[in-house]
Image (cartoon, rainbow, N blue to C red; front, side, top):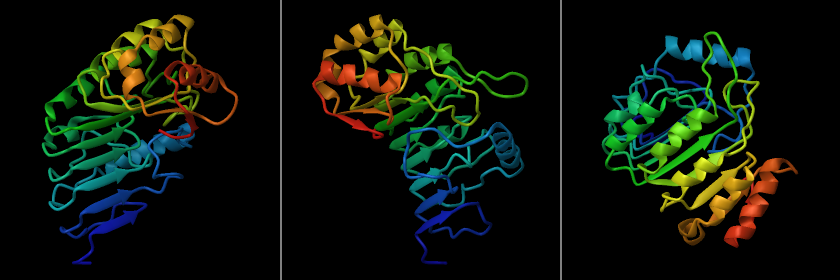
Length: 260
């Protein structure tokens, strides 16, 4: 174990070697991908969160770790501790950005911030080494009681922060994410305003339908025409595919299903 540098595990054992450089935790289907829905039922999701709160991640001793990937079964919580040596971090579900704020060397971040308040997302601007950020959203959670939820208003709040991050990839997915019973909303016209300022955006996926005014607004985004390398849409004939077909015509790009 002393010379082990890369490890993939469905759970976090005790006594990981301090020289570990790459670590992947969780055993989700298609764990290598950033995008798409996560196959959790509501009851399973609550069990996952309950278990995670009882066993927070304590990885700060892994001082050689530069790459970490956490699956949807290992959502990031405020009580988690991450090593400051990280250069690349991929989170399938992020419920708090607090553990990220100590990662002064972090260069690449991929995460699903759907349940993170906009104020917390803004705190990521403190990470001055960040050069590439990928953000992925699912359909809005419509739950009450103790369950977390978010809405199209949350996306609008996040959009104001996107322009302050080195955002290179953005995905709006139909899947309900960590909790079931999600839905997707029509992208409103005002969302095209912050998109106009995303100078570094190279990958865009929209499974949500666009309001006509929003589609027209996106068609005017000259900088997206110049920087976008790829458009994505989920397989199938849903509204997202129609949206992306229209955008592909606008930006004169080839559309690649299921990819960002």
